[in-house]
Length: 111
Length: 112
Image 1 (tube, rainbow over the protein chains, first blue to last red):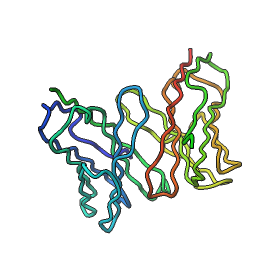
Image 2: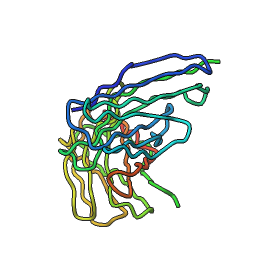
Image 3: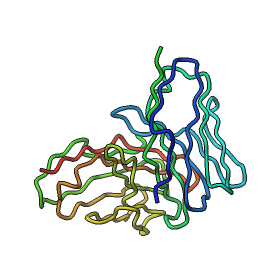
Image 4: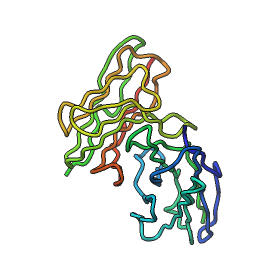
């Protein structure tokens, strides 16, 4: 039941853009995005709710297509600090409000 | 505020031993969850709770028990440790179901 993330890994030069996708086979109520640096806990980036509401990071944007059960995270003008693993978490009815996370997308930003 | 506190940070167990991973939060959050993280597998939900006295199973609950007697604490019990339970365990809490989850620093558990 894990959502599927793509790509699995991406390498960017500083200043380049990237898109990370998340898709689910189940109807979604919300999609959450987190970033995790090696050896650390995941850190909240953004929540996208059914109906269009968004909560989160000013410098990161995302979209949520409810009909297609997909979300995309847009990282523009990437900085070295953007490196890490990005996880999408989807809220599905069978788990109440708990999240079902994807396997992650590893992002490396190089100078 | 300390946020979400997990103890211990590291633990080595022998097969068949039992132990409890502790999780406490001081933000008065109703929602708490336990995840395990294995290489290449992402975060997988073990158990979750939507308030004191209410718990439910996640994706990978076998071999684990939880209870939620207070809003602050959500311990995870390994009943009889197995090598397959070697993992990093994260506890998370949130104010409500559709608010940011705050993660603890994790417990790195090795079972020999």
